[in-house]
Image 1 (spheres, rainbow, N blue to C red):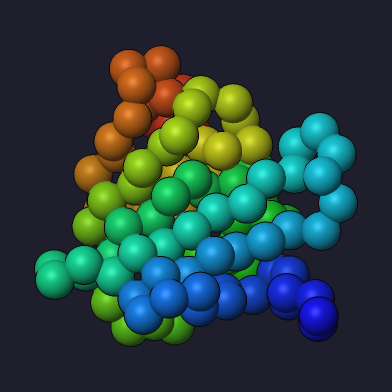
Image 2: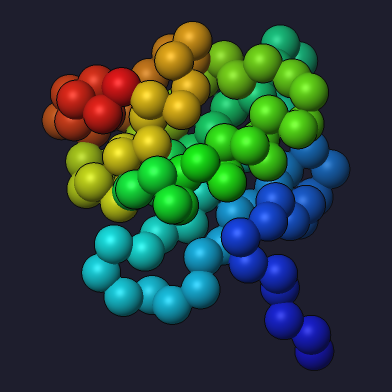
Length: 104
């Protein structure tokens, strides 16, 4: 079985992509994208610019507007790149939305 590519959008189903980062140490998380009728939903936004900038660039290459961010929880490695998607609605717990706005 081959390895799944990291640091690239990997389509795992029609209109569903995963962004995997190598490692697994503190500060390393993964993200996802779902194509909806009106645009894209991004799930988590990673932590620091070296992580979220290439992710946001790959999402932008899909050519559809990002309408929603789903922040799974309030840890910075999941909300730090919220600023990369300034026009999206932010969905999640009140704490995740609060921390996500700090990074917007």
